[in-house]
Amino acid sequence: MSRIIPDAVVSAGKLPEKVDVVVIGGGIVGVSTALSLVERGVSVALCEKGLIAGEQSSRNWGWVRQMGRDPAELPLAMESLRLWRGMNERVDGETGLRQTGIAYLCETDADIAVYEEWLKHAAAVGLDSRLVRGDAMNALVPGMGSPFKAVMHTPSDCKAEPFIAVPAMARGAAAKGAHILTNCAVRSIERSAGRVSGVVTEHGEIRCSSVVLAGGAWSRLFAGNIGIDLPILKILGSVARLSPIDGMTDMPVGAGRFSFRRRMDGGFTVAQRNLDIAPITPDSFKLFSDYTPSLIKNWRVLKLRAGSEFLSEMAMPKRWKSDEITPFENIRILDPVPSQNLIDGGIGRLRAAFPAFNDARITRTWGGLMDVTPDAVPVIAPVGAIPGFHLAVGFSGHGFGIGPGAGALMADLVTGSKPCVDPAPFRLERFKRLQRTAA
Image 1 (spheres, rainbow, N blue to C red):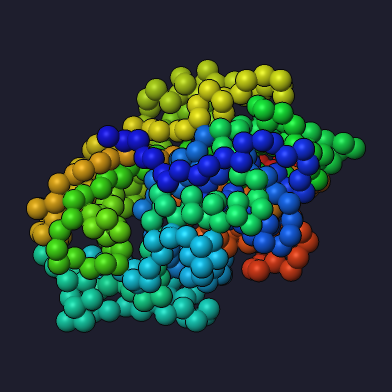
Image 2: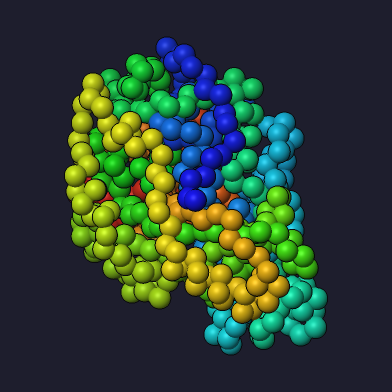
């Protein structure tokens, strides 16, 4: 069974005639942006074509980590975790946020060398990550049946429950005055004198002075219709839930080819770590040169797959008018079929390393599509060519953990406030494709 149903969020129903900001997309980044804006007294409408957290925001692993982040993302991850810690009180709801720490298991000396290099970045910002060896390692992560050389551990890292967290945050934003609109696809943006002046939804127009696109895997398609050539491809993650067992740590654990996290219901969310599927689509060829350096560097962790995605995306309209039905209305929720081979491989390696999982059974599997940039760092930035239009896209599988910080940063940029972190690493213009377009 692959369909994930997040907690329900009641739609506001009636469209407001006018707001300050329209947020497109009801995943964690869009919801966090709306929450941050409405708390500053900014009127905001969030438009989601399907359900709140209906796609990757309810399908991810549920890790809220700073450990192992790209140095460009690390300050944002730390700010995000600070916001996560107060989220239950902030939205008066349960997100499942618990500080448990997170552990990475080192199987080889090469693993240790990589983590020792990353620890230099952690030390520079005062993060509590460390390498643990010997008896302390076994006490920290009990139940290991395979020998590991070391554990990288970050005690301050956390976990949360994706399928309840984002809906709780959306309900919190609504309680503060945000218009949360589900089953409400945005078809296009309206401009006056070149500047954003509103959006056209399937149910009518909303006037506004700013728009934030936080469309996840749909972002490239939407942006392309208004002339922005975003370098984003979709990557398929495959995940399983295992039944509860005793004796396992409460903190998320990752190794070279498996990961697990104990859930609030007692079961475990499990996946094959460091291996995802890259479906071959027409965009794979269009963006080949953009992604070549990443493919060379990460060829071991990406599995190319030629399948039905190529024909379905080739047939999907790339341009439409505001009075036409869009792909967002034809496909309300992306619900991709997971790779059973990847799931079985991850569970097999997990059971070899932690024999207690031999007694756990698979109770559900699912897939999720991640929007990935060439450098795996998101875009959180205004679009200079369209004043009033902003992007919060390309989170590359990291969106759940850094979502609250990303929403706060986007709210800073929209309102002209002092940014909570340096926005330079997330600028749109860093990509050569955009530089060529501008030239």
